[in-house]
Length: 157
Image 1 (cartoon, rainbow, N blue to C red):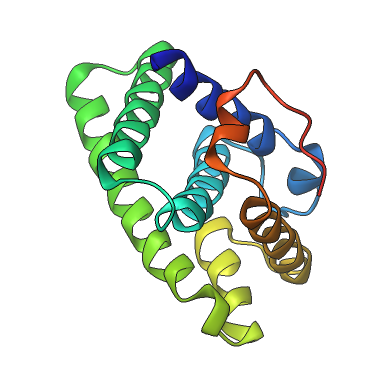
Image 2 (image 1 turned 180 degrees about the vertical axis):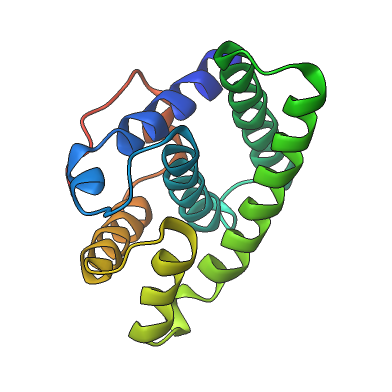
């Protein structure tokens, strides 16, 4: 089952590495921005599958993904104290993102645009991100969680 979690993580990473996303960001590309894009994908992922799957299963996926994030931060070379602080910051950002993603369907277009201004400091291409994540949300709703547990898949939406 742990391999399934790794496949989910790798599929989310594949989405995060979409070069088109970074062409639309006006600020320099950084680890922090890439992580926030990952967290946005992950928040939509959890929202899409929370009704169809047990809380325990989603908690295991959550735990695995954040363990992988912690390992990535360690690989960069930060010390233990810095890692703990950064993980706390990223978890707080993630919960803030989840709060906004939970309201996505009922949010006005301007509110959706604000999400990308707030987290990615995007100033000109917010509409692209709104469209991208709406397509991603629909893609998630049209596929099951099991679809993501297979090997790294082709993600076309």
